[in-house]
Length: 231
Image 1 (cartoon, rainbow, N blue to C red):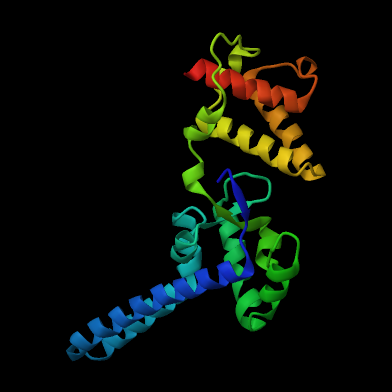
Image 2 (image 1 turned 90 degrees about the vertical axis):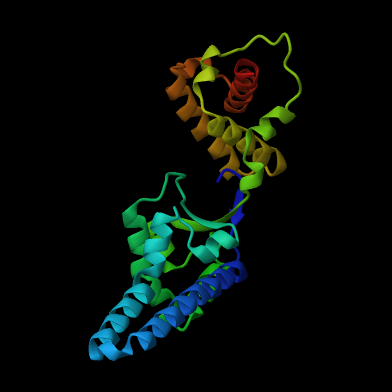
């Protein structure tokens, strides 16, 4: 999820309807099986009731955890949950989102979600604010090494930092995305992302901070070095 934008209210609403459709199909299947085994009496009805309640209550929590931030509906629309600090979501993040889901959606009849997701800068509902998460739209087809190969040929290129070979392909793509976003829209937030990424990579590569004169130039050098050394 290197290249992304915030999911819109309507995209998230459609994902919710898709999830409800999935649960509706599952419920229909359960009722069908219950009718087939109706001869077993009230025991079947009790089991059906427990299964349906469990699925409808825990569907979002279980699906988002095991699908790494995407329910079935979100995955269809290329939506995914991520933390604002860029770290992978942990179980507690999903639990907080799930725990406040009833407050955000059901107790307010959806009004809270419509207002917060529709008009807040980060498009976060209450559960997302408390868990420090957002729902983003990602573009997986663009997140590949093919992006790096668009860089001009680096024949006879002398690397500035030989340690650049230590970074992963995903980190190299992240560098390119951060630089591209900063070039397209040089906001304070993007400049901060460049600084933070520079610090993280320098620490990983064992490069003293004093050797980095300009964070943006450092990231560009690391990216070029990686392409040259990994070919």
